[in-house]
Image (cartoon, rainbow, N blue to C red):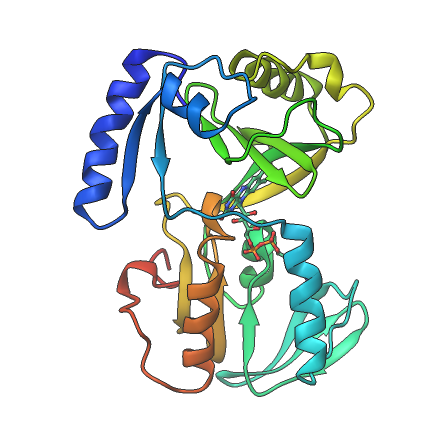
Length: 276
Ligand SMILES: Cc1cc2nc3c(=O)[nH]c(=O)nc-3n(C[C@H](O)[C@H](O)[C@H](O)COP(=O)(O)OP(=O)(O)OC[C@H]3O[C@@H](n4cnc5c(N)ncnc54)[C@H](O)[C@@H]3O)c2cc1C
């Protein structure tokens, strides 16, 4: 969604490029957005619709993944922090955790913004900054837009989740600190009500604020693949702002690596050893 015609024109150029690579888009006037989502007040110049985009509720996804892992015979050990590794020569024998040691044939390092610390103990250098973001869930929104939106000038994301509406954004570089910066949260609310004028900033009063850390490598590319630092380690981290979207393909590639199969895409651009 774009508040100004200037931003919409800029996004239309991007939309044309997107169409050319097979990701379909439509450039919509404000009237057309209102026609497609009647009953919602939009204070915008227009929008680019990514017609094949989808969205999900991350809490439901994690619940589903948890039960699916358990159904398939996997065991999840909660609150076990990896503090080190036991190795024999080039191979890892066990992950050393606050809940004891866990031996294994193959290990996958996927610790998000905390991955560099876990990697360092192996002599593996995967530089990363944590990019903190916030989100708030309006349980009873005054209006419930049909579409997810990215408010382009404000860099805020709005997502319908069941009956609720989630509003989030911000990229704050403050180390691995999850504390909430009220000024940043105010910025998200202020921006949101400009695009959706039926809402008021006070709608957010008393709502809990969730904070999360995006794992951001300096070159914007994930770390995915095997590494020279240990024969039986697979690294899968550093997905920045796209970790959910890239989760399925990452999982598929990790499975291929663990099973010793050829990967479905070449991994040279995302080599975990590229900064070694
Ligand atoms: C506000 C916000 C909005 C976002 N919106 C989107 C979006 O719309 N689409 C999208 O694709 N992505 C989005 N992202 C990004 C996405 O959340 C991340 O890219 C994704 O979570 C990264 O997944 P991950 O599994 O690598 O890391 P995480 O989700 O951070 O998971 C890492 C896990 O490892 C655990 N861990 C860390 N260290 C250790 C240790 N030593 N021992 C044991 N466990 C450890 C952590 O506790 C954590 O559970 C958003 C992020 C934020 C903050």
